[in-house]
Length: 124
Image (tube, helix red, strand yellow):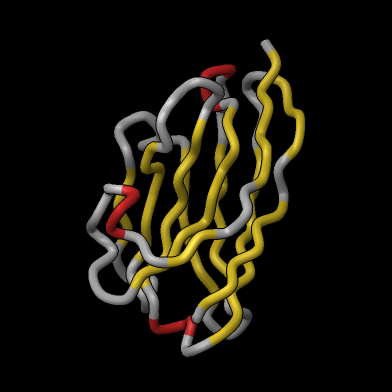
């Protein structure tokens, strides 16, 4: 079992930046691929970014490519999502997820563990 706790969300103006954190605990959490998803009001949860267990490989949704950076610090059991040039359409609840195996999966159903989410609101 892996427990995930997100933090770092908040209210930011368009064009600003935020860094989200996800602290993982539990069974060999550093060996899991990690991902970020988001869900805007009235919309389905969507993939944002993912990273391999060793941090060497990353994958991004087109909507955040060039503006988002996912990284991890396995010594701290923490994964980060740095978001720059934020837009109002980035407003959503951001969720951290973990899975054993490949990081290169974007469907919600393929991820095994989830955090409770952190709200990001971007004002125009």
